[in-house]
Image (cartoon, rainbow, N blue to C red; front, side):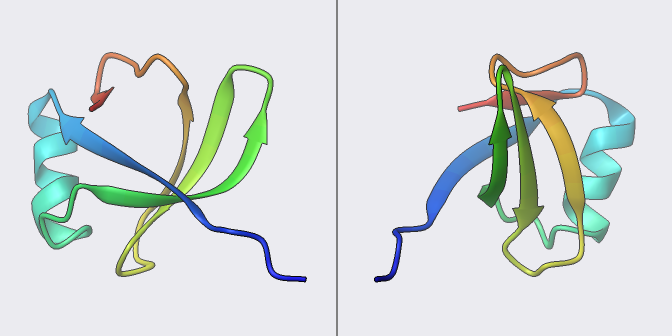
Length: 65
């Protein structure tokens, strides 16, 4: 049985995250959720070039939209 993939959209907030968004994520907002633990998500960019743990409420670098 296949499970449905879960996605979130992120928006960069800082210059560091804006740089990663443009150069490593190809300016694509969607990220696939690979793992979910308590209040954190492990996500991977659509182009599979950028991975990160992010709190479900976002953080100082990224906003979940």
